[in-house]
Image (tube, rainbow, N blue to C red; front, side, top):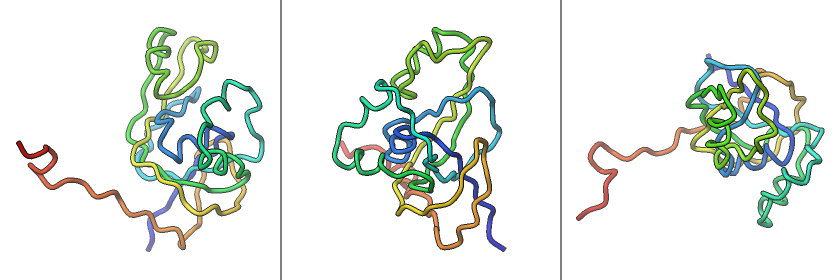
Amino acid sequence: MTQQRYAISLRQPWAALVAAGRKTVEVRSWPTKRRGWIFIHASKTPDERPEAWRHIDTPELIRLAEFRGGLLGVAELVDCVEYANLETFADATPRHYNEGSWFRPPRLFGFAFAHAKVLPFVAIPGNTNFFPVQAPWLVVAPPERPAAGKDLPDE
């Protein structure tokens, strides 16, 4: 039996930025206890605000941000952080790329992603919450981790 895989849908260009590993936190109004590999789905509706698109600054990101309505990457969901006030939200801007005006009291949540990678685009319907993905042809191998004691450079 194969392990159930899940995806989360994001508007472009955010989906491209997460899949490329540039945006490491996705902001939501709800928390999650889910952890593990999550497929990144580009919704059919893009975010039209110029402040979202200013982060698309390479030819590779431009091409990736053109995809709509399907899976385009995968990342490991490693944490869910709470932003209880504007100050903590603003401090995390380099990770989530959202401006302070996005903060909505009483709080927001950041889904922290690591080990993101781009995958070949696969058109499938999305959903606003996590949704199951039946994609046995997409195999996600965990990234290679350094052996114990091998993560520091030789002196």
